[in-house]
Structure formats: C-alpha cells, structure tokens
Amino acid sequence: MIDMRKITAYVLENLLRKAQAATGKGITETVRLGLDLLASERAAEDSRRMRGEVHLDIEPGELRRDRR
Image (tube, rainbow, N blue to C red; front, side):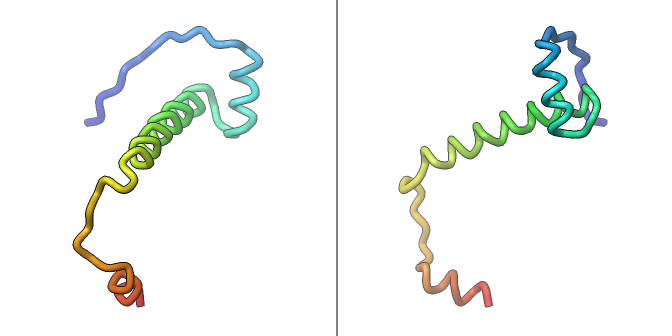
C-alpha cells in the first residue's frame, strides 16, 4: 500500500485556479502534479550538477552502434 498523508494548505485562490486550469484536474491531482514537478526539477538539477563527474567505461561510438 502506498503511504499517503492528508494535509491542509493555504494557497492563493487565483494561483490554485490558474494551476487547475493548466492541469485540467481537481485540487488534489493539481497539488500532486506540482509536487512531482518540483521533485523532478530537483533530480534534474542534481544530475546537471554531476555533469562531468561520472566516468563511464564506454565510448560514444559504441553507444551509437548499440542503438541500431
């Protein structure tokens, strides 16, 4: 079972309305999507920060051949 947590949050009404219009979803789903987006942004930022620090033992040409 997925752990869930019920929260109470005070948000600006117009911000919530705009967010719901953008998602086309209800309040709960809109908040979930916003939280997912924030988490994804953080993960992408962490990945960008690691750029050049991860050393792979594979050549780019080998990767290209593997795609075919």
